[in-house]
Image (cartoon, rainbow, N blue to C red; front, side, top):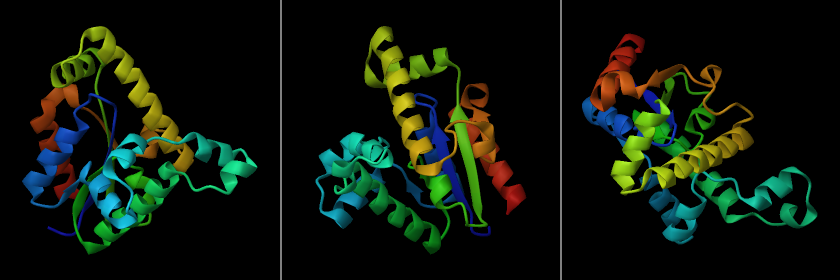
Length: 198
């Protein structure tokens, strides 16, 4: 198989993490998601817990900086530092070989790589609610609030750093509803598409 770089954007609770993991396992290529936080911590010296808090979030100082706030312009926030370090890690990983990378604006960071195949994983709200309730042992009300909160954070983060629209079909090569084929079936579908491309 030729070199392939798969990036996966995902709605919260859509199973994007598991789809990416299953795809990487099937293709026998490295998989990157939350381990990017640990790698960024080692590279930056910033504690993992702090970076985890800012993962895929746009910090207030970044937004102030974008609006021209002087105090924020002088300060590089933890969130901004994380984005810069993760961006460099993502570039290094993609240059090294085939990989699957979940979230963190990877599709935008790697937009100039001809091997890039960017995917967005979605699913209906009831399916996502059930997954979050089961995975996080949450009552339905809390899971519904989490869906809205995390999706909003991811959208603001993605839109801020990329200038594109998070979740919009034109922002990705392919958008897939994981509820139709399930996690393994969705991974197989993506593998089939990749084999056609490569």
